[in-house]
Length: 224
Image (cartoon, rainbow, N blue to C red; front, side):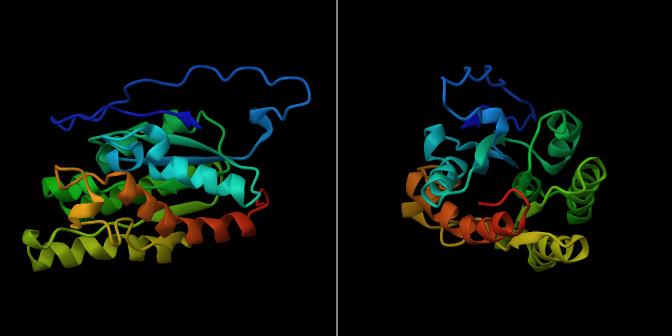
């Protein structure tokens, strides 16, 4: 798995920490990784795998699932800890320099934690979708939904929670309604900070994402 990730950033600064080294040339008779279809995971610390080994994060677990089920795809993890939807939007043009065949988009959790206006979050995500569609109209997008913490108030929760459903409907996107289903707020599924999923939590997240992603790959020209 190729990695593009950010370190934990308590200050919430949006930044990419490092980029991957070039992949080694394939041995004689081996498939060139450059010829394999790519699934790009763009997200926050939830995708980057904050506090755990990178291969324990749900994108890495999904890559193992792809191999087991005979899909030819490889995975690139472009998660950045602390990133907001505005930060993801600023990264889009850079990410579009890379080849990918499917985009899995997870963003907005840090907006919610900061109390960002849901209309701003929605607009940022829509702009990301628009830029990807303009550059690569053939690339399927899987949107990973989030939910607001109840202590933010009923009005905020209702406005935030409908962002993902409405964007998916309006843009004809595959949707995972809630990435943290059976993980958020569950002590045994999270690190001691109570916020970031532990390896068991990432296993549950992979199980949540996989059925939706599998259907997208089956319908896509590059599917297994």
